[in-house]
Length: 172
Image 1 (cartoon, rainbow, N blue to C red):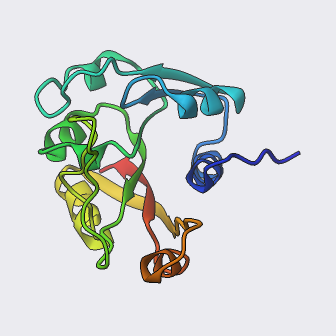
Image 2 (image 1 turned 45 degrees about the vertical axis):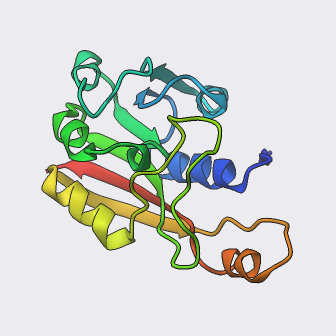
């Protein structure tokens, strides 16, 4: 029986993960433990999360664990230099999602949380290039929209313009 999640991106993300890396598998998930860590565990994955370290500078954690894959769901857009951690990952598989740059909206920046801002919002070709430059071959990719229930021109565009980009890559 299929489970539906309140956030459309959770549903798409778990379906993409199950397609490219079926459970059981052990994952190092970049980012602190969160609701999606629990969703992955409920789908048969063993999840190890990072501890909130600054992955722009402190990349050792991606070398410490022997895992089937590294996942990163909406993390790289918060980093100034994602090339460093991408290059240092020792696992041979990477499953990641990033928000795409929307031509009709500015980059996200929280008004209350300093850490919650997007330094990068990628175009798909930019993220592909970053992965290639850091030693990854893209095997599978997918995009989806993120509609919101508001009235206006931008909410209508969000129904048709992809917001999230999912990539499964393997080490070259």
